[in-house]
Image (cartoon, rainbow, N blue to C red; front, side, top):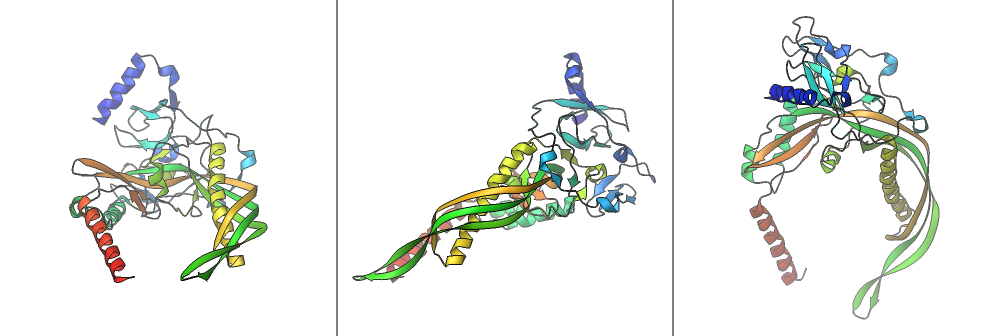
Length: 377
């Protein structure tokens, strides 16, 4: 079915004479090659940590220089392609080097699999409008392990129906590398605030809490390492955030072999917009940390009127591809989606809720509160 749809789309595009608006992309020789033992397709295997032939078991390590073990931090002031990339429905044509078939892909895709012969299609990772990734965090969790982690995850969902926990099974898994930016920066924050110290005083027959307020000011220094920003707009952002953290320090210099056999996507959110988002997240963290510092230094109970002024220096970035397994399951004719962190195994997704369990829990809490009230607690 997929082959037929590809052919129809390709023919329709030719008939409509839209080929001038379509890019052509070449595949890379590193992943066009076949298994030397049986001529099978070589895929990156998370458990082997290298290329693996699924037919004969031949393995091959990904060659890397000793000086290129991990991605370099790049200075943000020298980044040349800053803007977001929004190709919309723009497509590109890739000619398979194994069977000669032409396939249609979204421009954002870096890699995929030929729908005609299942050969790997790893394309150039940059074009005239985008930067290429300088690092990749390879898959460490296999597809079968992702399935096992999903079963454990759904089993721990307290409000999920028992039937869903016992019968839910992932339909299929898509291994995909999604684009992320990471930012390092040194921060210096000047702050002013009021801190309050509580004391208990007796007024008549009642004990009341009275707060004495004091003013404070100071500065706070913190070095930020690998602030992570999702660079795709094609997937559920809340679900992606639920997969964090990634161990981004455990990355490799980007090589097409790492994405062989997986789908990979270019960034849609450019570095300029990503840095704005990063500063927002960093500022929120600094706000929490400064508040904690003031409370600790002054043994304070509460803070008000906190104002920060932060300068960011020595800003560097990495453009990484991070590994994610995507899948879905069905319960009572409704589809629920979930993702698995391909490095750590953390699961994020949606699950059905048992109304009966929720009602019983609420009733139980209310009963406990009523009993506590009548017993005088």
